[in-house]
Image 1 (cartoon, rainbow, N blue to C red):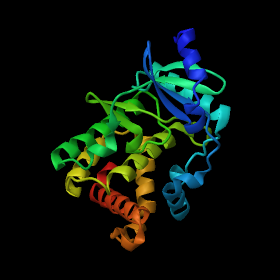
Image 2: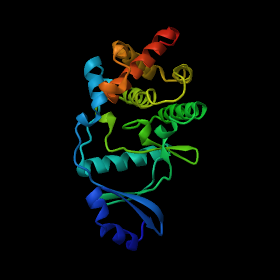
Image 3: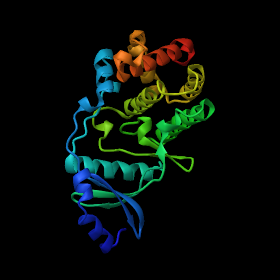
Image 4: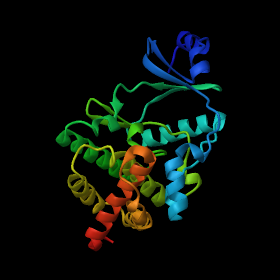
Length: 262
């Protein structure tokens, strides 16, 4: 709970109104205040949108964030549900009409660890997959499971950004498969470890997936396969193209090298 004095400090600050997010040092500790954001359409996630259209796979379809009070209420509800299931997420300290207050998690994005020296980067890749497998085992799912939305704090993973709810558009197993594809999309191209090492880690994790999730991931891999022929060079094609090419090539190699898993 926040004191009346702390709430007054927040309510009278212009920062979160102008920039939507503001950090505060309060007697209760370091917090993040998030104001309401406008609705965001699926175009914001243009890579996933393009993949969904090209492969005719609803698993890859972005879930639009409605914005405003609805998105704020969704984030509070999702954070509390995940916390109740034992998933590390920021604690909700206060929910007001115009803003929410979260306890700040000190750490950096998991994605930053993917460009470290190969052994450390590979360990980070494995840790992210294990984190997803654990929360899926708790019957949970994320919203945008890109590695930039996973924080590393004192060696532990924390999950952030829950302004949309995939279960409004798809069943649980699809939402969980979507988590894994989003994670790989954000990891494979930028990763410093050899692709063969990434495949070995991914394959080991895939063997432990729930069968309905694995089935949908394999289906997505088949749909992506032809995209492995896209250019591999970032210039002049842009990052989106080479990111998709890397994911498609990675998934095709896995899907065709271990047919016994299907």
